[in-house]
Image (tube, rainbow, N blue to C red; front, top):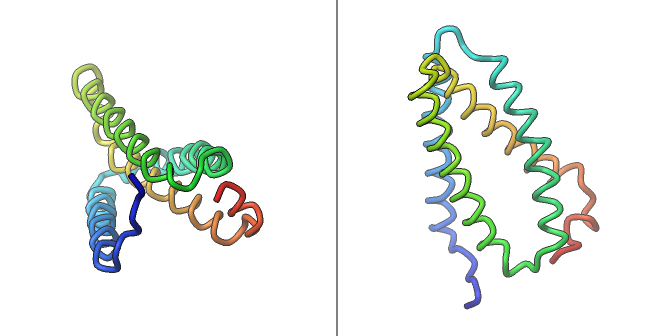
Length: 131
């Protein structure tokens, strides 16, 4: 089944949803006392170093019509991992729970770093290899 490009309105709804999640994470980070800057920086670095090369390798190895399917699988796996981490943190180490905002903000910033690097640093000829 061929994947259709999202319409302008669908893309706007996607951006608004992501923006609301980011705003919620920023509010949680701002309300945290003390603010988990170290956790946020560590997760930013880890996310950028893991997600960036994985995304670029996937772009090289996968045909363009498979990107959406792989994105759904990756998002589902990330959600399951987050749920598992939260369950373990609450069950065995409740003191880890306050660092949730640092985790969310770090992953968000790391993903943003990867997207910005791809748009600004990675040459166009390398971005279009898989497509």
